[in-house]
Amino acid sequence: MQNHLENKAYAGFFVRLAAFAVDSLLAAIIVGIVKLPFSMASMYGVGFLKADFIFRYSFLDVFSYAGIAAYFVLLTYFSHSTPGKLLFRLEVVTKNGEWTFLNILYRETVGRFLSSLLCIGYLAVLVQGEKQGFHDMLCDTYVVYRNMAAVSPQRPLAAAGVGTVGGGTVPPNSGSSSQSSPAVSAFLMEESHPVPTAEHTFVTEETGYTGKEDVPERVLPTGEPDCPEETPKMEHSYDNMNPDSSVLNINKK
Image (cartoon, rainbow, N blue to C red; front, top):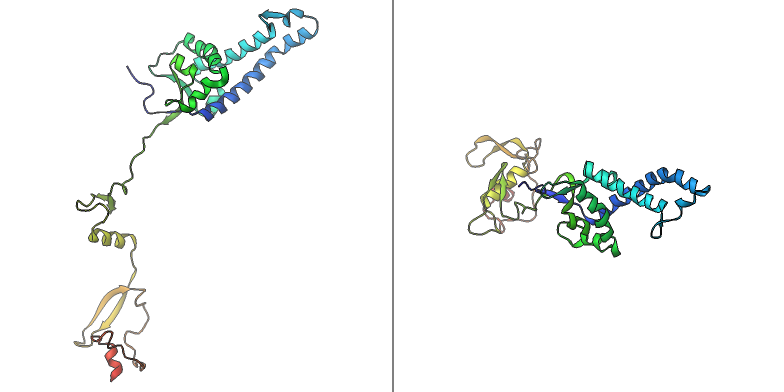
């Protein structure tokens, strides 16, 4: 048997309350318009319309309840929804797909009456795992979102220790999950932060070889002289800090 609730997202308490408020307002307006001629007739002498019809309820009271119940029963049975539910993209479904008029009639009349007792049946939606009220539990119905699937949370790749290199994936280090490989880290830095280079001519002091090398623009921008003709005399020597420096030895001559 097919499960019609597979990957369905259940509607919570507050969105269902908002949809019910919209439907109650629309149903009251429609029933009020239909009941208007009877109300006017009762005002002009038709007394039985205000007399007790069932217990302490008059004919107009019973007509109002029947009209509002018909609003929910007929719309839910034929379209699995109501204007208020459609506004929030909700629908009523069953788990096994069975859909009968008697089941919906029982849900929208007896079921809603039981749920309205101290509103306990409606508040059950807040704590029930599948967001069912008493009227839903009695008739095995569920209110879900239309065209919306429930997505289970997945652990991010970073939390699993998997990195990305060039659009692919790199498995976590078998020795340590908290430290990444230096080669991979250097590759990621080079790929994510490319440094523009500029062509630069250099002269070696020992061999006199002239060649070309790509160096970062930040270190040696294009347009600066390679070797200045005169080097200003420096007051202090840095030989103690860098004895092998061939550039600073020029200042001693």
